[in-house]
Length: 121
Image: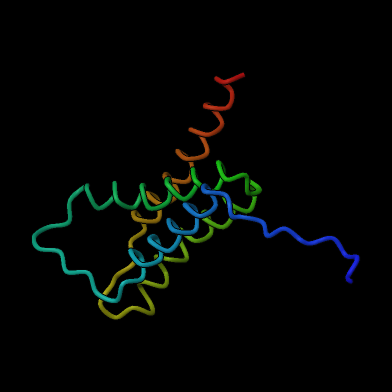
């Protein structure tokens, strides 16, 4: 008989699963090979960019991942994603204002978590 204690399988935290799902959705939205938009691009495009970075920031921080990793990863990903769209995806174009909107989403996400935690104290 084996005397080793049985190891328990650790279940993923729901917030961590949400974080991963949001990162996958973000990657699909940012790197889909072709996006056909009818008519002029309006401010709603920037709102989508803010949300694409705000929601994963919130989920990652609330899941308990190290803030430096979550914020660092997403802050670096913002401009890099625009460069990839501009140089590597033939039917997409990078936009500096999209990167600004992305970074704004990260900042708003961090702010919501910090303020929310301060208010609960």
